[in-house]
Length: 479
Image (cartoon, rainbow, N blue to C red; front, side, top):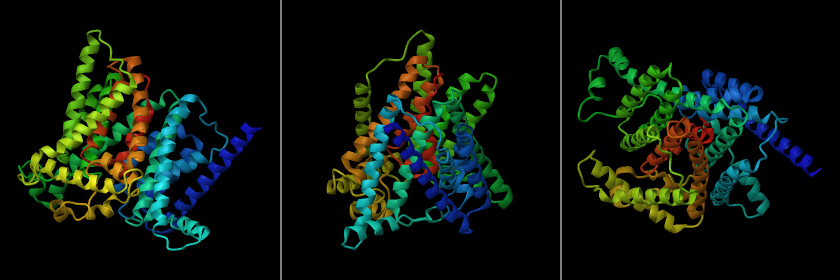
């Protein structure tokens, strides 16, 4: 009887979630400002999620990185497609749900982090409500959930940040659930992620001569090869997030290339395009991270060919080592100088050191639960040293782990690292089973390289770059 009640409650919850998502999607469609390609893709994702989510997931992951190109601000094209897919899946009320111990162990840190995010959102939102009566305050908070969220930008940043985290959790858990139902899905997820990034890289490279031939402006080409060249990425405005996306796809493609001997030349062409696009993005963090983890991948392959096995290190030791590396890399920003030559690595480090000071000051005001999800940018001006205040006025942390620490406190960062650690431990366990020449090993390195770029950037703030990471992290290929 209790199991029946649990099943019925879960079905009601899924129908309610689907209804809320469909209402938001309908509101966006009725606004008249959503481009027709986004509407078509969202409808396809909705049907695919309801009919056969295992087949639709790779399609959705291939489309998501192109959201900024599909729809201009204020439309949230990527999120519209993702919401439609999730709504479709929720309509499959008769589908079995994960109930194994492994599933619960993986979901526990994710759900705890979501609970902290929701709590933080409620705290920030309540602070904006002037009503006194508890019931009136609760109603006012619920009314602040925007039905037109998919066609707004810049309003209620705490709501946008909270919904992005909820979306990340859903993508991660849903991918982890679906890959256990189809043994081929992990590879299809990785192929879709890699090919989408390769297409973005090719588009970035091609856009330069195309712009030159359509405008006749030689500077469009010269700016990418001169000493003072500019930075660019075709599919994303945030070039650092684009660099993180390229690195994730590039390392995944190394593993895919090993499994597809016939398509190996094509993967090499795609990897070359990713390298050129990464150079055009001029993301130092992504370039260094990519070089480091490619070297680890090469070393692992050479070791495996000599009969060596990957080290079987306990999760506790790996976790302590990872935290030590994060702390060391974060502190290394103090080696730079904000007074150094403009554009130099030393100046970049110096500026990030001042951002580190900003984050530390903000964290000190609310160390346990943080200042509130999505509020870092708005509040940063009050904590910035004079040097970067004059340059930026307001800005994000340029270190996503420090941003989580400032916004969600020690509790939030601790659970966030638990989430990442649990998922990476699963990937590493798969790598140990199949060796260093496997797709699992390349996937583990890809996720590690992406996370390393978060020490000097914040790709998680960009949905188009964050969603591919969460799907890859959850895919867990067996071969």
